[in-house]
Length: 447
Image 1: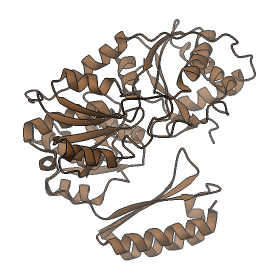
Image 2: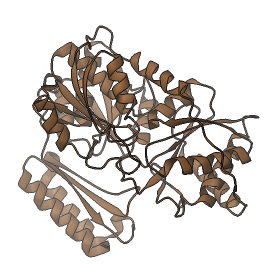
Image 3: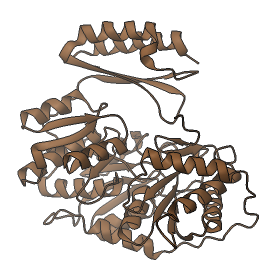
């Protein structure tokens, strides 16, 4: 059934406007508490935020709803999304609540929920919570909001976890790294972590003011990092997004290494250690065909899922795989955590660079097929196969490309967009077919 509040990554919107108005947020807290009371007499929630100026208020309103529903609340303050998931899983919390809009600009915000296992709730649970929101939204919300005081010990606990994830024997002391923390949730954790590991760090994006999260920095804006890494003679750079659930890398000469490169580097290491079950890695439909080809040459298969880390995790759990992720930089190391974690990914890559000498050596032989992703604004989201003009453009492109290219056409889960991804051996084919499909979309449902 259509969902009113939850998208592919929690609830997302503009603070003060439904679904991020106080009445809906309070009802969300009440609904979550009601859901938890089925299995727990005294449910306990953990809340964390990123650095957006709207975060503390949203956290307070959701907390008021939780408390009204009989749940107790602990507040982590500014903490990464995977940090909240980690702490929920390793402690006696029954739910994790993250106030963040990830890589979006500061004007947006959102709420994500994690189960006591540190995983996103399945669709059925989110639909149940939605029904509770609709029921509780008619009730009077809190007039006095709780004053949430951060528990700093939670940060130290998460840092201890990350430090323990270094690959044994990796000589990290003195490793020169540039960190871009996106003026987001990793702005303190990132420098503290790599300083504690003995690295020599240079920082970008560690001065949040509530409005500069993801602004010209972080994983969506890599130009500064590409310039800074060679200038500082660093061995590599890493950029996080606003809630640090993803990480992208820059090699010593300024080349971008995305999530596909991370999957290749880690898969090679795990296979060499006989720690890659089934010699299989899980990625999504967006991962480049070049990754599939280079893994195949090393007798490693690539399974693909729909876009979204929840679908990657679902396949990993079903098939017993330990490594999976997305081109965008969400990478899951299942033996460490079920959540994509940018800081954890950075620890793993730093370990491998320290053991092997360079980031480039970790991804040797990987050649991206030319690829483009076009975003087309749409006024509605009918089933794509119901649009004749789009179907004709797709059929023509697929027939021409055969096995030497791929096309992925999907709607964004959080924005009013259709995304057209085309990759092929020749860039001319990429441009030709991406434009023809985008034109068909604009003609059919363009905004």
